[in-house]
Image 1 (cartoon, rainbow, N blue to C red):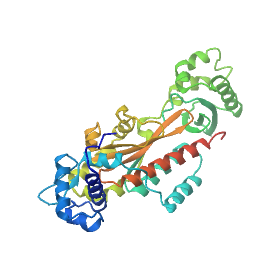
Image 2: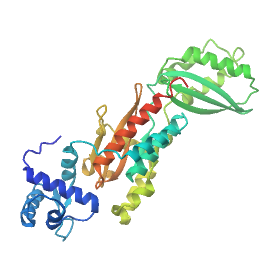
Image 3: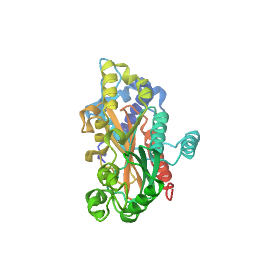
Image 4: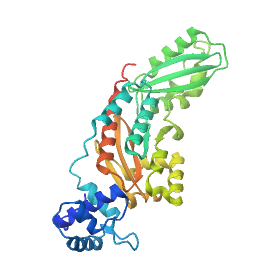
Amino acid sequence: MENYSNLSEREKEILRCIIQQFILTAAPVGSRNISKRYDIGLSPASIRNIMADLEEQGFINHPHTSAGRVPTDKGYRFYVDTLTEFKRIEEHEKNKINKEFSLAEKETDELLTIASKLLSSITNNVACVLYPNLDSGVLDRIQIVQLSSEKLLVVITINASLIRTITLEIKMDVKERHIHGIQNLLNERLGGLKLNEIRSSFKDRFRDISADEVPLITLFVDSADKIFTDVKVNDKVHIAGTGSILKQPEFESPYRFQSIIELIENKDIVVHIFENKHYNITKGEVLVSIGSENEDLKLEEYSLVKKEYTVEDIHGTLGIIGPKRMEYQKVMAIVDYVSTILSSYLKRNKGI
């Protein structure tokens, strides 16, 4: 956290007022506006002098010929760093979050989708929820279901909580005893191993098994990299809220409109942004990265608010991408709460 001791208490108070007012209105903030709306006991002339000092120090600036000021990235950083606590989440918002999760099936993908939709609908920003990195996840068990004469559904449970499904094409006559046989064999030899261990050693672990002994073994040997791998990039992120963010005044400009659409449509970039080591999160912390602090130039007009959710030793990330003029206290509180609830519901999958 940056040291703001060079700012007087009056300067800090005026700066907070400017930022709060700009977040509310999206309009440049003048001294008379501050004087009327905030009971700080200073005349417009005194406020103007303080605003001039704040501008000189880089916390606010003139957007154009207007007499009003807007926060800079440095100003927003001061605001976020000096927030003493998150905004209290409204009871109806908590109820909405809890109800949506309680009605969900236990499938991991559905829980992540619900998390992204809740984040976007409550904050009116773009929400992103990344699937956790599964490589270090431990295989709990495998279940195999015959969908048709040509398809098998493979359900793998990781860390006793995360559930993934993979469809395999089959080109042989499969009987129920074949399915039970391969399912029992796979669970016996692979249960308790990490996915990356399974991929690298799968063939060696089944060298002594022939297709005559266990029909379907060849299919699983050939499909090991597909079954026991991390989620593909296109399936790794759940994004919601494009419509909500475009209603905000920042996106009336065609340039801004196009830039946010391009960002959201490129899932590779979104995954990179949320997985980038530049944005590392301390365990349990809500991270806020503002404008020019973002390593990716595509985010220079936006703020990123994110937090990890956890399932045993596996970590995923969720968060918000929105304009720098966002209600940080509320957004940080919602991101924090949804992360906690998502972690809780994923852990409840245990034993399914």
